[in-house]
Length: 278
Image: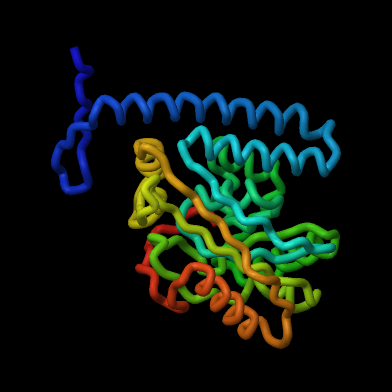
């Protein structure tokens, strides 16, 4: 006897029936995700203090790759450019999955909105992995974050920002805001443009991972794990050496990211009122 479908209410108020296969897929992946999060928290709390920085970095990257597999995401990662020192990574922004896709390819320190620090589990893990938290409404806090970014890059680390400032559905690119590019200008540090996109297993565009339109984190997770599978692609462009003002640098980085995406730069992505994790 076939398993019963589960009723779900969509945004338009209609009740949809979820096929049994989708329910099984979703339940299995979320159960594995819970176990993976518990493992990550135990390692971050107990093992991280005992590990050398390089060992922690390798663990974070391996944990991120495993997370993507648990969620049914097949990562196709181009190798990042080999650099002898620190760098500033700039990338388009679609989903909270972006963070783990980048972690899977390169150890970075993300810059995130301050509210994420107080989120259960995610905020704690973000702090343990060296995320920098910024209060976006305070201009003085941007100066503070720039100092912290500069210190990390001077020490040879990579820092990652999403200069669009919000997410899109992945079909375009919004204007890159220049404020967080100032440390690269001051240090004459390379800026590495990157571009990511998500596809179905058939190679078609999908909006399933997009964290937009006031969608909740729970609904976003369900959208992802309900898919038969997703392909996540991450590509890197040639490093850009700053030569002038940060606005010029932001325009160069935006154009480079647009070329990687095959998109038109500046304002082509839908407006996104939600303020997701950076």
